[in-house]
Image 1 (cartoon, helix red, strand yellow):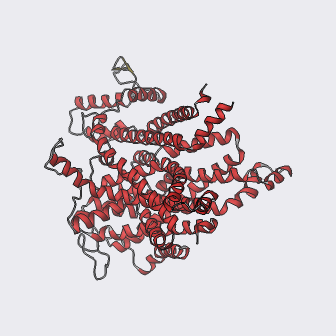
Image 2: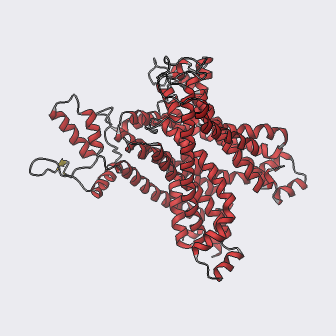
Image 3: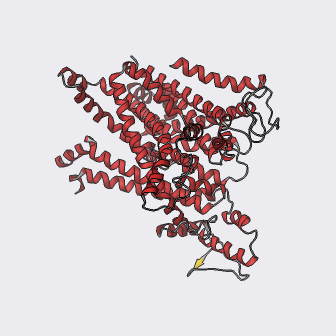
Length: 357
Length: 266
């Protein structure tokens, strides 16, 4: 039945595949922190236990034992042995418990910001990360591709200067570039603020002053990610464009005497598709790099949340953040895949083949 | 471009190897905190009064070591998986391809954080190199697979099979040599990404505990507020070195691409 709708079939196929990837990602997120056979609760309690009375410490410990699913639980209470000690749960039971918690959106309790829930901390941080990264990656991709196509088409002096420049830009680690920008445009010439998402003396609200401050703080993080991304994309597009320029359809179009813009538009459309696939594949790396940029600027997003969590051995927080980053990357990838489904003539061509059968 | 790339890259290797001979490397406190460049210590001192020249040479050695270690692991793993899957085809290929694509989509940065943070003690430079290598193989597997499956239907492979060569022999004798240039280019990129990954993971405080790397130098500069205080010698030299190594490797890679794809030249 679905053969009649190859685009839909393609989308469903991709959705199924991403669901599988999601399950594997959750399993990795569960397994890796339990690798070293060290019990995260012991490490947490080693720090948190000091300064608490024995009874408080025991309560807190049991709460974490329960949350990490390390002990058997029935009806919301910990199952105990004869001495009153909690009974340890097996790895499989632990995983089951983890899945159950994740499915209701419960990522545990932050240790550093106790008793705040991990999910609440993430809810505050996520909008900042998305507001910074989504436009930056999109703009970087678009501008980079346009410049790359131009370089491929024009060649000559423009390309001679542009290409090594783009290559050099893409060699910068995101955070190094961020540090240099902060140094020049905030320390040497104090044009822009060096850290934070908005001025310290403001409270987030829908006021003009707040948005102005946010915009002002947006400039440096934006450029430190944008320029490197655009450089990297431009290089890919340039070689793709040069390849396409040698194909028969472009030669034919030139031979027909089509306007330069028209030829360039054809070239762009055909070279864009592999670039779109490239975007899907490198999103994970981009997000990783961009998250570290947030740390340089103390930007109040997920990157910063994960950095503070790492510094404080806040395991529930680290795991919550990594899971959420993975989910965001998966969603972004899925979106790009669906776009490919609509743009790629080969997926549409499947439509005709399907009809024929 | 190739010459510039090679020159820059061997320049950094030379500094890493010869540096310790010319300069006396010391990790001792030799002067006041953040003493500015000048005199004997012409790149200044860090927050602990350590000489930046010594630190940078050590850091450079570490970064190159991690880059090569991760690059070798990632390229070997990726090439083996890619070449085998591409040649075999069928369900083996489908399965390996699925695993590869799966791990491409899951951000390797996340896996790096999760593993590194679970190693609280004994997180050595070698361990980090191994972890980076184990998370970075997917790229090489993907590109090598495409090349290997294109080679699969070539006549000389069929001939070799007819002559009774087993899979291993076909792979090693009849496929791998054709991919050598390609694998080498993948390796160059993997070394670059290994160096970048180490710097990134050190930057967030999950770096090696047993030595100095360019990433830990930058991390320390950030943590001690050198950036805001305008102590440029704390981060600019390290930044320049990382970028130059990666730039040199990218130059080598692109110029090799130009050799194998003549259209890119002109």
